[in-house]
Length: 83
Length: 413
Image (cartoon, rainbow over all chains, first blue to last red; front, side):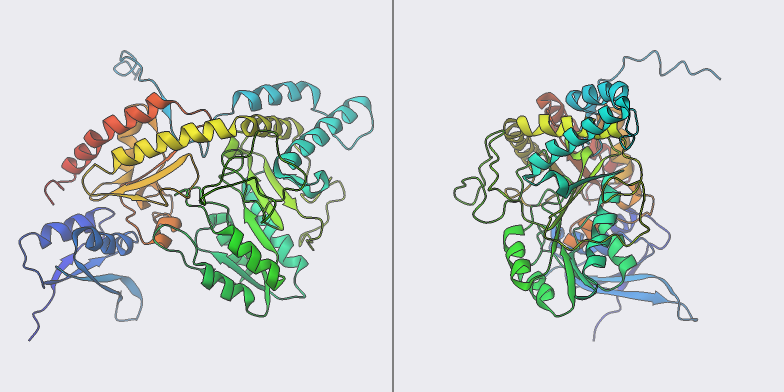
C-alpha cells in the first residue's frame, strides 16, 4: 500500500518560497516519501525539478489544479525523495 | 523631508556589469555628438546640409556593411533591435508566402522573435539541451517539412552565451531552399560572425580563431539570408537596429509603403544615432580580438569563483559561447533581493528570475533549458572590461548570497 503524499501548500507564495518550503518539509523525511507542492508561482514549475536534480531527488511531474468549474487555479508538483 | 542620512556616506564606486544595455562607448559617443551638429538635416532633401546628412548616412551604411561582409544596399537601419527583428522576420515570411507559411525557430530566440512568431501563428518551436543549444536534428526535420516558409536561429544566446550550431543549420536550410533568419543580437562587435563554410577565417580544433582586425576579405560571407543586430551589443545608441537582407532573398514589407522611406525600414532615419552606432561598431571590430580574449579570461575566472558557492548552478556552454556573458542561479535565493543588495554595493547586474520581471515569469531562455531560475544573475561584460569589477563581484558574492539566504530562513536546507 502506498502512503498518501505529504502536501506542501505554497499557493500564493512567490519564488523562491515554494522551493524553500519544500526543502524544509523534506528535511528529516525518509527516501521514498512522495511530496506534493501546491503552487501558483510560475517559476516553481522550473525550480522544483531543478531542486530535485541538485539534491538527487526524483521529479515525478506536474498536473494542474482545477476548481469545480474546471478552471486552472494552480499547479501540483510531485516529487519523491531519493532516487 | 530632506534626505541627509544617505548623502553623508562615502559614495560606492559603480561597477557596470550589464553591458546588454550599456552606456555609449567613447567612439560611439564622439561620433554621435559630432553628427548632432553635422547630420541633423533630413537626408532626403537636396540642399547642402541635407546632402551632408545623406553622406554621413551612406558612410555609416558602408561601415556596417563592411563589418558584416555584405553590400551596403543589403543593409538597413531601424529604430531599435526589436524593430529590426520584427520587421525582418515579417518581411521574410511575407516574401515567402507562396512557398508556405510555417516558421521554424528555436526556444532560445529573442522574445521579440518569439512574439512575432506567436502573432504570425503557423510556427514550430524547436527545443534545446541543458546548455541551451538547439537540437540540430529536430531543427533540420522541421525545416525539411513541406510548407516551411522560413527558419530563425540566433548566432548565440545573449542571456546564457551559448553559440548555436549555425553551420549545420545553415547547410540544412540551404539544401531545403528555406531562407534562414539569423539574430546576431548580442554578438556583433563582441564575437566573430558565424561565417559560411569555406569563407571563414582559418580555425583549428573546433575553436574559431579570430580574424585579424580589418582583414575581412570580400570572399567571407556570414551565414544567414536575413541578419539583424542591435547597436547596444557594441555599446552604440539604444535606438539603432540593423536589418540586413541578402540581395538574392525575397523579402517584402507586409506593412504600408512609406513614400519617404529611404530603405526597408519606414520612418525618418536618426542620422546622428546611426553614425554613432557605425563608428562604435568600427571601433568595436578593430579591438574585438583583444577584448574578447580578455573577456573570456575574466568570465572563466568568474565562472570558477561562482561555482564554489554552495547550491549554485552555472548555466550555458562553458567553451563554445560568447566571450563576455555569464549566467548562474542560486538555490533558495530571491533574485530581486540579490540584484538590490549588489546594487547597494555598487554592482549593476541583470537577472532572469521571475521576481525581477514585470510579468513575474522566469526568463523563457532559462525555462527552455530546464535550469534553475531562482536567484539568477547575469553578467554582460562591457566592451572594455574592468578586471577589478569582476574580481570584486567574485569576492563579495558569497557573502551576499549567504545574507539573502539567511533573511529567507533558508540556512541549512
